[in-house]
Length: 511
Image 1 (cartoon, rainbow, N blue to C red):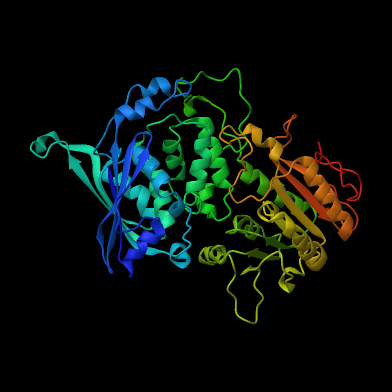
Image 2: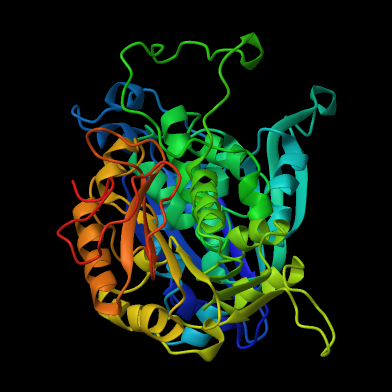
């Protein structure tokens, strides 16, 4: 199996710094299934090509599988495809180019951070769906795709084409993104893996797909193929992707998914049983948690009669777009620290472009919640939906001062994951966070303690609203705190407010 990566950005030999592999050396890396060789067939000032050649040893692949591993019996049968790039090559990439896939380069950090002109070639790739499938997967990521079907036998053209293609990708892409996209999409093209799919594959998918998979128009199909169609893992992966902050709303709103998979059901069908036919009267899938969160926020804003709302940490504006559709809200603003997120909102037409004589109803701008900003003031309500868990704990007091002390709206809505509920996600490894950028995830008691202290410090009242199915053992998947100044107002389905200075003080807050 062969993969070549070529760049023409002078000095092109800096590709060696990015890959942490010297252009003047031939290096070999032992894998559990063979040997990966890295060398440079072309290393010039204006063009440099790095090659990864994987020599698969099927006997070694079998012998390295201990009898205690879940796929030991499957490992006795090895599908040896020495001329096809597959998940074996993806695994070798993850081992040999690990640092490059993380986007780290101590010698050339600016080079690792930006796009490069790249050409990636795989002479033979198993591709179920043919050239059209390769185009469908790679073109939305900005690649120019050339996929040429390979004949079963050139001497017998009447036999037709094989399910392999010669794949060439060209484009200006950050090297780390290109490697991570290949890592995910090579086994997706093949629709097969050489190892057993375990729950930790969800973590690998979310990590490698960060920044591009959530916005991919075929993200659901990619997720299903990558996880070999294991429904529980697919649900968990799509749920975590739907929480990605920088994913455009229209991509995430396709294919609604169940973010709160229930605990194991003893009446569920046995593994391998045929899935029920959707047309046979099966109940519709539950509303995804991302949608239920937005509904809870919208209902609270309406119940509290807030008409001027600022969404702090708005990402690419999923909530802001919903608020804009509702003429109840007179003035709206979206703020995010990411310049890219602001650009996406502008391209989608979220802000109003009026002349200087007319104040826009909807504005978006870049800003950091850890610094005082006069633009945050003057609103009835501020929303921090799935934001605080992305802030380093030592910087939370600065956010509290900016929002509750400086901007000081009469209403503040904060939502955050309930870490106790994580055990209900089949594909989430023990101790892992729901998103790789989460700095923490709180229990209900920890969230209530923080919210109660903030309310007492800044003179607010606080009440707690569960979002999602409220599990009797671990609580809801999302916890929401509603801070208000003045007299408390009961939210739909709650008993009203509690004094922020009381012990616990929750409706479904502390356990």
